[in-house]
Length: 332
Image (tube, rainbow, N blue to C red):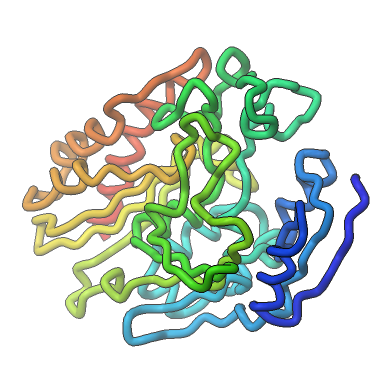
């Protein structure tokens, strides 16, 4: 591991100033992904800025929803009574990820910023990785690409985003709060992540020096008084413990009897970012909840899929996962 400097931020402004004034610095929360990448030689920051003592760990109810502090632990979010009751999909997504030991350390901000688990990205012995070394190529395209993207990829990168939490937050239409050298701003979760295009080394639309301070869950995601809004998270993986999704589905559905009023669907494991197709959601509005409507929506979601040698199975798996998730949430 490359030697690095360590500083402990005393406040949010202090943390932002330290990041802005230091070249090749990284914020350090739980470190569950960053430290692994440093050990592998993928990340080589010159300085770590410890933000774990900042006052960003609260989980609080507000008039317009719930605010999750950036340094709140994944464990505390998943087990919080308000999250379990009102945002079931988020609790289920977090509990399906990693292991209890990692959830006890991982923070909300770090979860959103974790990097792809593409084999070729994680192993510097592979020279071709545009995400790690821009312009070097993509070894996954001609290599073993079973876990890789089928939607939204480019000829520069077919990596997928690994976060379960981010998929649920996308279906909930969360908003990420950040602070940087130019002040505070709000980023809708749908605009937070980037597709690879020609710049796969850029995972998000964060500006240099910006720090995630909170994640806001809108009140609109809360169940209606008659309990007609329900949500679920389905994760399909190779094993039940500590495995990343081959395909996952976060579904938030509002029904009136057997009729769908509104649906929000996000997929994980299929693209460089949580994948949401508003056209598929609109196609469900006013339809009777059932397999025919669910299959039609699933077909819209996978339109334009591009497969590679080892991951063609993901297209049908995504279709079936969408149908199963919607069937489960509307049967609750």
